[in-house]
Image (tube, rainbow, N blue to C red):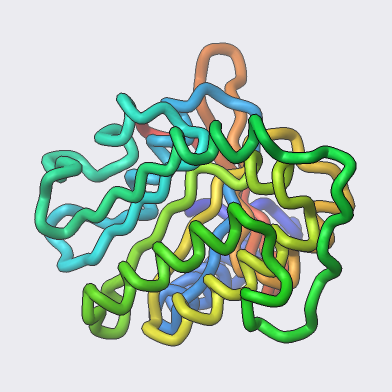
Length: 239
């Protein structure tokens, strides 16, 4: 993956690229959380998920959680030749439940404060609690070996709208603890043009930030590693 230039000499560029690659590989070994942003077509987001869910030849436990994604597109989030019915895949489709919760939510209700603890029950909203409990049980039931779990959430937008920023932060924090405990990788789609406050709240919980864009008919992605602040160039995303 090509790194954005930080210097004029080729040697420095090679060292930077090696450092980026080494950091990325370390995150994959230890476990990490990825935030995917950008107002792009859902099929573009699905293409990014396919990469993050891992190659079909690799043993994975893939958990795809749908909140406001298009249910008919669930297969497009998964690697080629891996269908929603595959033994490595668990799809948690909460789109209908989310619509019901969102339609009855009181926009004037006071949102819970952000809790310092990762214990979810004291800090999440109703939707976050529901999603977290289901995902947690799925992870535990899968008896995941280290490095095998790949979790995708499509998307966080409805959680922000329904439960608020503090509750969404608590949801991501709790999932991060569970995912890192088994050396897994979680990615969270946030395509709804997040403001600086949202990004600042989630940034300490995110190891990799992937931005997506569509430019002149092509689709591109750019990666930033929080640990080192390495940023790649805008690169073509294969769909």
